[in-house]
Image (tube, rainbow, N blue to C red):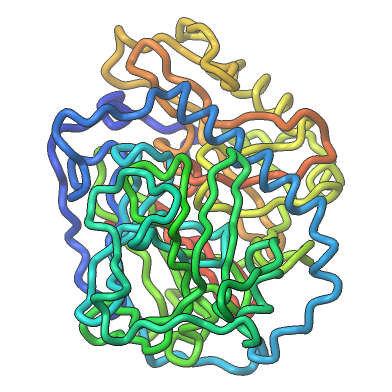
Length: 454
């Protein structure tokens, strides 16, 4: 009989000082993803001060507030022309680009990062990996007003022989309205973009195009991106952001001729082996991948999915499916903690606590209100948590996808409730750890598999 409990080694939740490299072979155009507390991160400086868990959670809530506000206010999407290249039958299955991906706490951000090359000769840039954004941008010289400190040299477009600015009159410039949420402006006939995030972080600069290098075999001429000359905010030591949303200006759409609007990733645990972000699907879909159709979206950027129910310790929670359907749910690589409708969270929390009565409680940690002092344990038994998605996709979370720790004396359930049942739910990156997450954007479906980082 299948057990409804995990045995969780406490060491897997605590920061690791050694890097456990991936054993996975290269799969084409793939970027590496490593853990945010950084033993595998090339950008992790010795002695650099990582943000506290309280700071990470505060930044996370600011992002959630921003996403929920954007989805509520996306009336402009009603007037957008449909992307003609999103024909369901148009597939490109013979290409794949595998890129390593790594989480970025050591970079001062709670998000994962990937490294790619821009320009001729190419300059390697480590960018925040974000399925909730569309425009890819990096800081550029000269920094007209302000640039935040980044680990790598700031990109200098004057040193790239393939760089050019995009004109104000181009359709790409007018497309920035839907991709960024802000109307573009003009400077001497050059298109100027502006993006602001929920925590008041922003990037403003020229909209440009240049050569994009994912791997030596996956190079794209004329990739459109933001060359930011006024940037400020919580981007840590990264060089900017890579937009993996569904808009025509996202990297997913811009590389569609080769990769068929298909990508996948695995986000590693703190002490785990390297993850990856892979564009394309040249090996076909594993039979073990469970798919759920994307839900009817409210806008073109976010990936909406239908949650039908949650099981804790083998017990299906008594939550009406309408609770999830009412507000909807997105999957987001940039949100750390999964957010649930208040009714669903209250039910999850009370059931989880019933299974955990043998362990001493610890004080709340910011928005996390179910914490335990596990300093006297090396391993514990915790109830399995699984999500049921539309299409009968049942996804068991990795044990490391259930807790987040602030040291052994404060290990917390990594879920939070929205203030009500009407705000959008978000399936966050802690819960996605070690899973193979497959985005068949052309086929309008999301897949889940196990052991994606191994």
